[in-house]
Image (cartoon, rainbow, N blue to C red; front, side, top):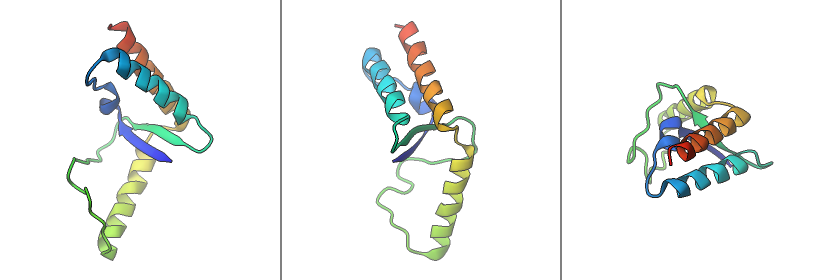
Length: 100
């Protein structure tokens, strides 16, 4: 599984800070799994994605598919590597814990 998340989403605390801390540490563990690149965090990019922009949208128009393919390639290029992302997730979790 491959997942991308902006750094700002990892820093967003919704609910109990301790639970978010634990969730981030779990994500960091999963991110280094043999079948996973989950947790790749895009830190600095001009790519924009907003809720609702593609929900339940299954494009079959060749031009649209090409555009999504181009955007996916840009996202992959802008993302941090697996180990760097895992380290970022752990650092954010530790910063959150320090603020408790």
